[in-house]
Structures are given as structure tokens and as C-alpha cells.
Length: 197
Image (tube, rainbow, N blue to C red; front, top):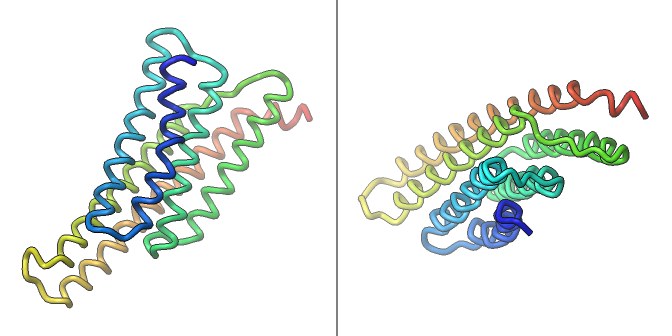
């Protein structure tokens, strides 16, 4: 297995540790989760660059790279729903888009073809990563406020939590709109696999 594929697999392997860091309540758990998410995101950036630079792009890489992205992002969103940081509607929309795109890939695979992610898929992933990182940063700041390193009233903490929740959800909705647009473009560009069936 080549280095880019190892990096992709490492992203999948990191996901359970990342989920545990989000859900287990310990001091600065969001900071730990952000660090793991950052490492996973860096592997996403590196695997494709290395594969193209060394000319070792494989069908496994074309298939597993977007799959690893989906596993990481959807795991995050589900955890966010559990912690009231994300609307379940967002998760349903993203899941619908991912199932639709995966169905196209499966149809293409029956013809022996591997359809790689397009530029819009990358834009979608970047927008999701930015939204997720923003939510982590806001939650870390909120945790610091709750630890009373700087004495602030409970009203201020509650107000910050309210505002941060709105900011996080707006960022997630923007990324979800991009997600839908990228899905529509992907299906349109590969509609031949549907019409052939």
C-alpha cells in the first residue's frame, strides 16, 4: 500500500478517537478533538497531493479518499447533534447527498469505472472542515469561560453560548448549501451512468 493510501486509512482510524474526544466530557476535550481533527484534515490535504506528485493515483485512493472524508465529517455532525450544536436536518441533508453521490459511484463501478471527486466535492469538504473547526474554537472558548479563568457572570456565559450556537449553525448551513450544490453538479456531470441503466 502506497503512502497516500496509508494517509487516507489513518484518517479513518483516527475517527473513533476523535469521536471519543468529542463525547467524553473531560477538561479541554474539544481542544483534543480539534487537534485530532486537524491531523485528520492534514492527511486529507496531503494524500491527494502526494499521489499526484508521485504519479501513484490508484482506484483505491479515488474511492477511499472521499469515503474517509464522509466518515470523518458525518461522525462529527452526528456528535454535534447529540450535543445540541447542530440541527438533525443538516445531517439528513448531508446523508442524502452522500448516498446519492455514492450511488452514482456504485453505478459507475458496475461498468468498471471509478469516478473521482470533482472540484466541487473538494470545496464542499473544505467548507465543512471550516465550519467544524469554527464550532470547536467557539466551544473551546466557551469552556474557558465556564472554567472562570476570567471572572464573568453566568449571564455572559449563557449569552455567549447562545451566540456561538447561532454562529456555528449558520456556518454549518452554509456548508450544507455548498454540499447540496456540489451533489447536484456531481449527479449532473455523471448522469450518463443513470441513463445507461
